[in-house]
Length: 129
Picture 1 (cartoon, rainbow, N blue to C red):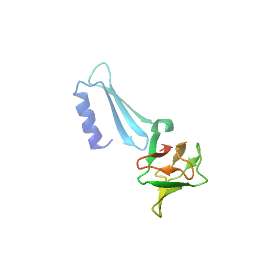
Picture 2 (cartoon, rainbow, N blue to C red; picture 1 turned 30 degrees about the horizontal axis):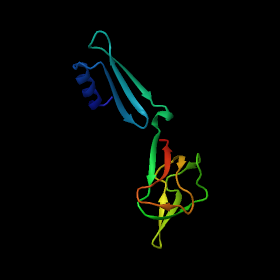
Picture 3 (cartoon, helix red, strand yellow; picture 1 turned 90 degrees about the horizontal axis):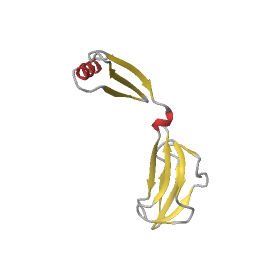
């Protein structure tokens, strides 16, 4: 372990805390638990299951206009970061709606040719990290 983790563990041992979880990034973490003796610790490095890393991202409109759907975009379909989900035609200007993450399209709140308001929900995406 590096010197920062050693310092954290030493401070943990001298504290009143009984359990510590340190996020190492990329679905890894360390759990540190004090034993009954108080000065001994049990350290376990673990990986987070893929299901635990899901987050939901709601895409809303920043424009008022008419929605033009990408015909490939349907509920429960996999989407990729950078994929065109549709566009909003506003005063003769087309504003693209781009998928911000890789994930699964959980909800499609709009249909082709719907009139869109500012702040209206367009899509809900479950991101899988």
